[in-house]
Length: 160
Image (cartoon, rainbow, N blue to C red; front, side):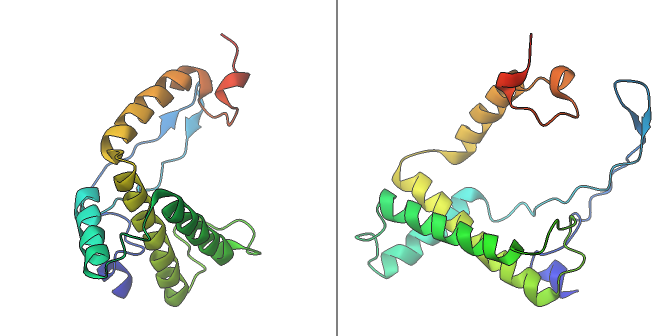
């Protein structure tokens, strides 16, 4: 299937997982969770950073790829992703009502967002994978599962 070959729409990468009904905090049985989508293991963020650096170097574009310009380009690309969702209402996970062409367009725009994000992080000397680990640890402290399970409130709205 073309969608799986280009990395769009595959549910997971051949891994099997077993999901059993879980119980909510009040003892109600929750329906089985759908299998989670997973990314392929390659390319890594470092691979993407390196490919983009080579691409930029080959074109002598580093003179233009300064943090501010990269941020503005990133925002522009996020706007292009937004346009793909505009006026559609809620969109189901997996985009079952989208055509293959629409999915490919989304994949291209999301790729642009990721490329600019990785290059911006590079130019700002932010090690994104390590920053993500620190941020996830902070989020776990701000949003303990026992306190926020099933709620969309901001962490400042929770009482101790």
